[in-house]
Image (tube, rainbow, N blue to C red):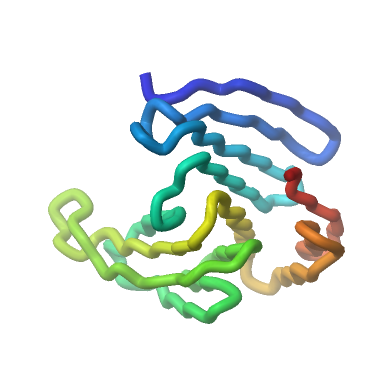
Amino acid sequence: MHGSITDFREDAGGIRFTADCSQAYPGAGCVLRQVRVAYAGWMLIHDSIEQPGEGIDFLFHTDNRDRQAVIEITPERILIRRPCASLLLLPLLGGTATDLGTEYLDSDPEGQRALRIQRVGAEMATLLVPLRPGQTADILPAGERAWRICVNGTEEIVALKG
């Protein structure tokens, strides 16, 4: 066993769950992942690690078999552009984003593209916002450990606990 769901909730805005992933990371102490999937289309992943060592890595793998993804990395975000949709990845608590290059997927030696966000500290919060052509997203600070997320006219305040 590599973890268990310790809490699951559904409300008018979406679903939330917490997973205890401690067994998957020996020596890290308590490892919790809180996930919120909003009906508005975005997802928040909040990881906390009791003993993170040098920090936390968030790995994201994309399908690169058609070579159509354009990746833009800035200190504030990663933007993956594809012909029919884009994906914003935002490290809400800061971090350093790196393109790790390509690796095998199926029989294609460059079929998978790997991205990493690293953060020194015991927690990381990553917001993923998928966008169709013409959609917009604004993510603005709304207080300490809180953000106003506006995706295509739908607005919500998200705050991290702790």
